Length: 121
Length: 107
Image (tube, rainbow over all chains, first blue to last red; front, side):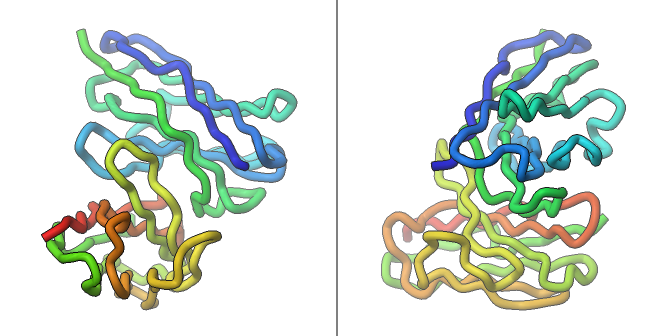
């Protein structure tokens, strides 16, 4: 059974940083691209960032480019999102999402339960 | 960027009725269109990919159709567990975008 468990969310002040983690199990982690998708409270879904199986290709939404960095450690079956210069607009539930393919196809076939990030003073 | 517009925003139906949800793209996405279901307090779940293919374990009452710019998700006979929010998503090019969602509520 595919499992994606996010952690690292919390309350953070504007301008500060936070690092999210995702522990993956139930599938061969380094056979798939991975993504972060977020959902602001009461709002829709927004793709944030994606990374190919070997970290060779990464992509970001314009809204986070230059502030967020996605990475993965295949030896630890883990995905990360380093978030810097946070603002209130980054307040959301952040989902760790598995891609359907080894390179990013943007087809999101399994989702974690999310970790909540609240940016507020 | 390709924008997806879903309609209606809310659909009020009774169990057993047919639900028809629409997703329109601002330009062609070929057949690179997926549908997701999200229940309150839960993560989204993939229902349909590439416009008309059901994901693993998805019941046959869920049917996707369309190509180019106009897509439809049809639920042939609503079960109690189908009342949820449904999102379409394209993966035609960067960045992938989601529609704003259609809430299917109990009438």
